[in-house]
Length: 116
Image (cartoon, rainbow, N blue to C red; front, top):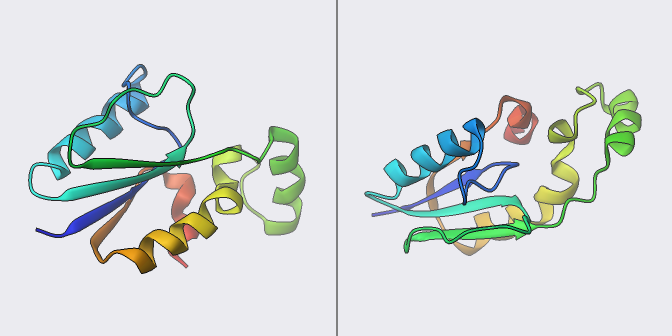
């Protein structure tokens, strides 16, 4: 049984919206046969995850205005989810070097730039 890393701008616990419910369902299916790490943003009302799911939450530092200005330089969409690399990349590098993951799941189309 290997580990799977899920990268999601939304913490799916608790699943209180459609996107979070979808992400939670994907995570629970993956957790049937794997340990799962979720790299996500901090959430004040974060709920408990299943036993073999580890939430790694980072603070959101990218503001809507900062994302809009940064989009001029990067050519990315001006939504904050297009700029998660600012907050996620240092922790993502740590996670990938600390444990071998058999797969990485990007839970949002605006995270595609992290594939690089």
